[in-house]
Length: 459
Image 1: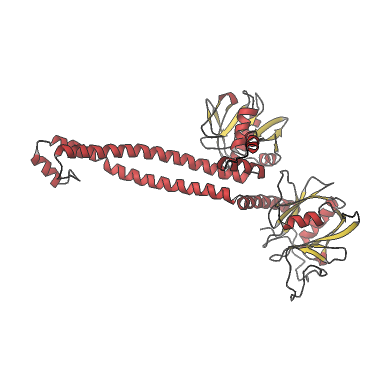
Image 2: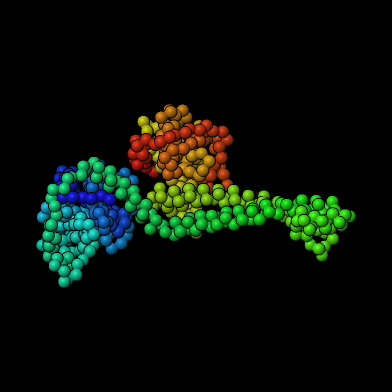
């Protein structure tokens, strides 16, 4: 939980004044209904991440390299109409409280210069975003108050800031620590957004995992029952042995050495019956074990898909959906089949990877040279990573291996590597088999590689 006190908010305000004052708000992105990202025209090293979450609202300038699609809703429409393309004239802290006020200048549709104010109230349990006109009359608020409240926040009413009853002596949080916490919060926020936005896909994957888990349980019960029937071979052998020895047969039936004997059948018929039950049990065991192995492989695959969903951007998600819910649009099918993987540059060497199985397939079999080096987490479904170099350095190999682990949500593990010419397609898109390979084992992942991965772009 990120707690922004008065002193920290003052530090944030000073940083904003130094870095983004006189800039234009070039873009606004809604990550979800309470988290927003503001991009600026002149200052582009960082973006302003604002969270109006109920428990601990905050804001911070942070580095955001990847593109995030905005949610399309009423808040998005209002912000784009009232705030986007505005010039930031001033930023001030209101009443020495947890409130920031942005003074903005915007050219209207009639080419007149309009002054507006953007207010952020970072009050836990009562966060708010409020837009005022030049006379400080409320145009819009994310949360309005009832007319009977002491402080009224309603359209066409003059804005009044809440009364400050805070302790001003709380120690300040270091801005670098706040930026790190804010970046981690944004990652969690994007994951929540992915789950909300792609509920149908998550539900489908989770349902498949549940079905497969239940299937394994049922197959294991079948195996237990089949194992109990293997003894019927011995019963059959004994019946055959006593075909003409009625006395010995009756003795073994009486003492329980032969069970489930059908007295209405002859010894030969019972022998055939026992052997038939035994053969059926053997067949059941073989098929059940084969089905269990296949179910475990499918569980690995769908867990891999869940990780892909968590790593994916909006465009990537559409590719994953297209695998399970194929579109009838031939043009879209064609575009998905030629989807672009991602890449990073490390000392002038391109290291590419796929976030989806379609991208993995495109990278390995269409974009990579036969002599380039291929990397994949050992024995489980995962991302394809390729170093675009015939003779990569050890450091490049380690970075490629770390990317494999990161994209599989692993902190350590074994990674297989070989040249592209030794990689063969499997039966499922993205599945591969390696003709020959060597392995690299990593005990941890370096922070530098995590940061490097955040600079990835589409090929």
